[in-house]
Image 1: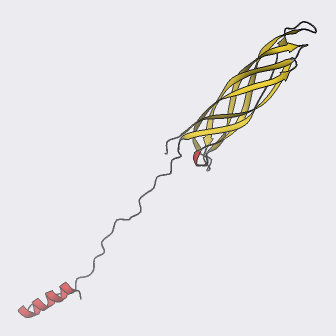
Image 2 (image 1 turned 180 degrees about the vertical axis):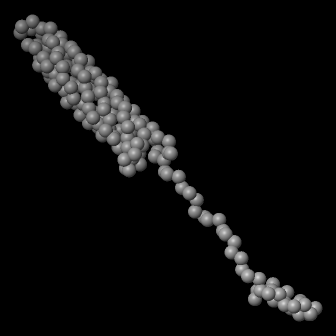
Image 3 (image 1 turned 90 degrees about the horizontal axis):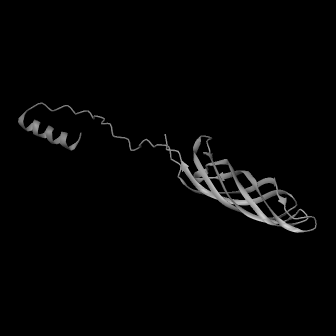
Amino acid sequence: MTNIAAVVALMAAQIGAPLPVEIPAVAVPVASAKAATAPKALASGYVSATGTLSGSGYLHCSAPQNGSGWMSGSVNLTSQMTVNGPDGARGTVPVSGYVYLTGSCQNGGGFVNGSASVSGWGTLYARDGKRAGTVQLNGTVFVNQYVSGFAWINQYANVSGYFTADPAN
């Protein structure tokens, strides 16, 4: 018997009333402390990628036979760069750009240099394989090399950009 029931029984006995039957315990549901958790959204943020940009093209030397002259031309550079984003998101992003090369030449060849603005856009995927968001990459590549009429370029590059996470469903 609880303290309250004992007091009630004592009062009932004093006035000659029948004793009350013990009150059964009532289960009262308690709100659960667990809250439903939404899936964790990936964080947007800055990313970088490295790789080798490759391309080739013909540059014509304007020099007469055994003389000096000038050469110029453009070369398309391309690469597939692996990007590691926030929270384990990753993907392969195509990056491309043109480099305009100029330089002096003699007997069909010479040193040329130039810079290219390269950019790329692609999708990154979360560890579970679902689309995580998009990434935009940009960078500048400097080329300085000897060419002999035909330029073969394999230039290491570091590009950076911003990852934009998809909103959580």
